Each structure stands twice: as structure tokens, then as C-alpha cells.
Amino acid sequence: MLYRNILVPTDFSANSFNSYEFAKDLAVIHNANLHLIHVVDITNSELQDNFSYGYGTTLHEKYLEAEEKLRRFVHLLTVKDFSVYEAIRKGQVVDEIMDYCKNKNIDMIVVSTHGKSDSKSLLLGETTNKILKYSKVPVVCLRSADPLKSKYSIKFKYTLAENWVG
Image (cartoon, rainbow, N blue to C red):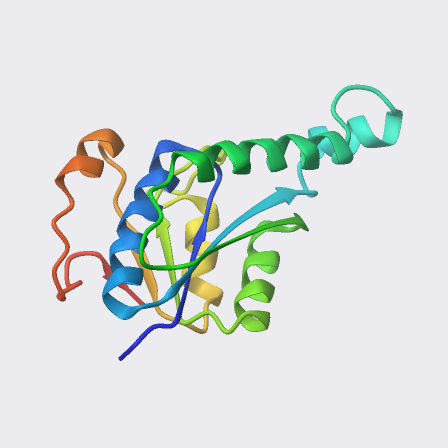
């Protein structure tokens, strides 16, 4: 199967950088476009409280902060032989990711098991669990036990047996 559009959701953590690095290898092999998405989570109770009462970090400030972080994140990336598309959305994280997949004809999602989320499931992050549950396209789920070590030890071949979920 050939993949033309690969999506990497990012929270700007080392783990999401590792997901990008893995997806980059897939994009080169399949001559695919790579999409990066960050969702400003409007369900965050702290953000809603601050927005409602007019103090602290507002939704607009979070969005501007995310734009800057995405610019810095993309600046760190090595981009050759494929196109990278960037998107920032506001809303519920998984809903926005699934909507993006549908609208941009995404063929595969590459995600790591844990990012920065405060609430985590036993084995996978809450967001990763929901992506696995609701995705209509294949999902590659990368373990994140040692993100920096795994960045330099990924040896990609055509077999995805160890990391393949979906």
C-alpha cells in the first residue's frame, strides 16, 4: 500500500519529534506529503476558567504560543524530498485530528505513546488511545520509553511489525 499523506500530531515534546523523524522516513519511501498538526485544547479547564474570568492565559494567547512553538519545531526539522504542511487547530484534540484526516485525505497517522498530557492511561496516553479507537486510517504508535535514545537508533525498514497498530 502506498501512502500519500502522513499525519503527525505534535505537542512539541521529544516524543512527538521522534514521531516526526519516523514519519519522515515513511514519507521518503512512499513519496508522501507530511502533515504536522497541533491542537490547542479548548477542553482544558484551566484555560476555560481563565478565559471566562479574564485573567491568566486566554485561548488567543495559547494559539499564538502554539504558532511560535510550531515555527520553532519545524525549524528543527530536516526536510528533504517531501513536502511538510503545518496546521494549528482549536478544539477537542482527537476530534480536530480526525476532522483533519478526513478533510486532507490522510492515509496514515504516526503518534507516540506519551507526550505532555497530564492524564495518562496505563500503557498509552489518553490522546493516543482515542486516536487508535476512532481513526479510520492505519496508525503507527511508537513507544516512548527513552525518546532521545530512540531518535538515534531508529533503523527503518519496510516491515513495521513491532510498531504497527491499526
